[in-house]
Image (cartoon, rainbow, N blue to C red; front, top):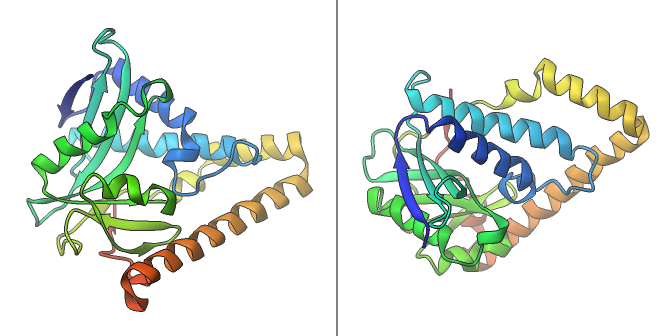
Length: 240
């Protein structure tokens, strides 16, 4: 098993850069948009999600007033190599609760129990733990002790208990990232590269895919828990 380390302050730069590279490499798995590499918007989301994780890692210095913790798994044979990370947000006003923000495991090290080990570390610290995943991943997290509690957009909301916390979950407002000069520059470049029609089609394709996943998540939860639960968005996070 890899060595697992908890960080409550910003991690060393080499670890941070490897985490950000993993986000870029696995943005389809990590992002709630689940953007496909074949979609021309893929590069835009690589930047956007990568920058969001960068901001959360920076916020670990306490400057943004958001509690953020990080669990990192490194290769036993090569301790300089990050093989997995789990970025999560402790809930304010509830010392037992936390919510997973982002998690990734290097493709070469999957199916070795790394995600399970990182989640177990988090749950040991915060037994009332929450995460959101796509329908296909539900059995995976159920095997780790999480249960379905509702639907949130295109994802299924899961918790170690049968309800969410009433505490305050503070999250970063990501809207400014996608309204930034950098994102506009990337969009302009993609527009030149692919043409206007292809970009409009790419946005439609993304939206159709999100709508389809949202219906799928609601149908799945409705089947599991009943009508009311399918519309349950859980506790609404506070944007900072």
